[in-house]
Image (cartoon, rainbow, N blue to C red; front, side):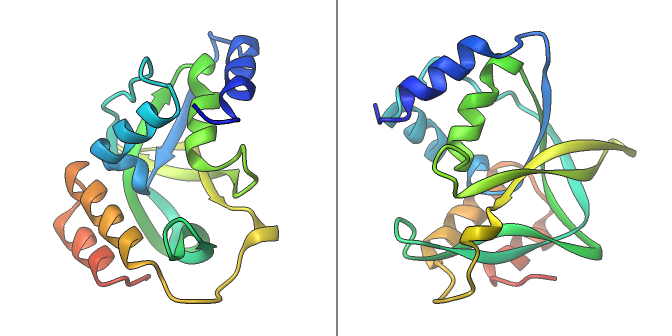
Amino acid sequence: MDSHYDQVMKARAQADADAPRLYFAYSTILDRAAFDEWKGQHSYGFFELPEGQLAEALDVDLVYDFPSRWWGGRVAGLTDAPGARVYGRLFRIAGKDWPIVQHKEGVVTSMCVERTVRVRVDGQEVEATAFVTNPRRASMDGPVSPRFVEALVRGATSAGLPADYVARLGRGETR
């Protein structure tokens, strides 16, 4: 258990359980094995990420803009990019569980912030919340983390994202 557990559990207790959130996940949370390991390390074994639906965020692209000591290089967030798209999964998260997702995505440590994205799922467009690099912490200094790219590819593959998109991730390409 880490020092953020009590903070997250307090937020969870205060959250509106009847207010689910649409969450667009495009990064390492899609690597189920790694996510299960993270849950165990942080005492969230009771939380299960739902299956979700294949989705694409519209008019955004990946940008490797957060230098991470843990990953040993820059990791990805999203940036506005008209005409581009990022694949992921769309999850409906119970309001009481949103603080756990925020912890995993780095809101608790001010690494990331929430942003609204337009997402296409089953031919329909909806708005969902994604997590992006906190602008105050964004930097293009240093190399992209190869370990992060490997985790991104593992997660995209296990999430059933399109093969050409997964290949693009593996090459570290944006747009």
